[in-house]
Every structure is written in C-alpha cells, then in structure tokens.
Image (cartoon, rainbow, N blue to C red):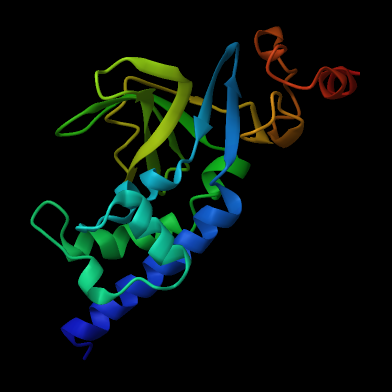
Length: 212
C-alpha cells in the first residue's frame, strides 16, 4: 500500500510533468477561439500554472513553476489544505498534463459557469475537464487587455449544467505571444467559414487562402 510519502512523490512528479507540458505547448503562446461571430483570446502566463495544480505553496507562483519545470520541486515546497485537498490534486493533475487538448481539439465554449466562489464569464471544456478563464485585470480591477487567463481547472461533468449557455468552437488559431497576428489554424470546423469579425486579428494572406 502506498505510503503518505509515496503519494506526495507521485503528486510532485505529476506537477513537474505538467509544468514541462505547460512550458512546451502553452506558455508564451496565445490562442484565438472563434464561434459564430464571437471570439476571445487566451494567454497562459507562467504565474497561472500554480492555480491549476490544486496544491498550496509558500513559494511565489513564478518560482513554483520554475522549480517544477526544471525538476527541482521538493516535497516540502507544496502541501495540501482543506481548501486544496490531496484528492483534488490527484484528480486534477492527469488533466493538467492533457491541458493542450483544450487548445487543439473540438471544445465547447461555456458562458457564465457558476462555482461556489465565482462565476466564470468564459470557460472551455471537452466534457471531461473544464478550464475556467478570467479577464486580465490589474490589482485595482482595471482591465489590462482583452486576453483571458486560466484560473481554475475543474474535473467534473456538471460544468455544462452550471453554465447559462454553451457553443461548439468553430476555429482555434495559435500564435507566439510576441507576434501581432495569428498565422496558425489548429482546429477548424470544415463546414464553417472564418467570420469577418476576426479578420483584423489573423494573417490576411492566410485568411484569403482559407476561404478560397
């Protein structure tokens, strides 16, 4: 039977594995989700990784991520609480390693998903797990830009029921965060055309070739 140390070692390894995936596939990139005429953009800052793990730490969010990515996270650098219990982390981390699936496969866009503490204006789900997104605000609640940021990873099948509306994504574009426009289309509903509403966000030549 697994000891308490064995269990924590397994969680630590999952966190480090997830950090590598986050670094390789998400950090430094921005994703554009398009559904109908509506759209939104998502960025994955390194200091938001901690929010998704389900553990507590006394480290700064950036240092936690850095240690995990470099394989230097130790068992005494994270812990569990009533708010963030071991069972939740054990459930979340396998999905955190699969987080890129929400950026490159067909997903459902949920609106106003309600939780005990917050209403997420926008969430993305594959019906196995759901990423709750928040607006990019400063410490005074003022919007910094139009990007949405990952805040909560929920592993449950009731996210749709807790939302006011849901729509299937039509297109997902990806770009390096330093680029001005999107030039990589990574998911497409073949029955749909790219709407004019995102023309100013995507590479014009790519857009023209997509609709020919």
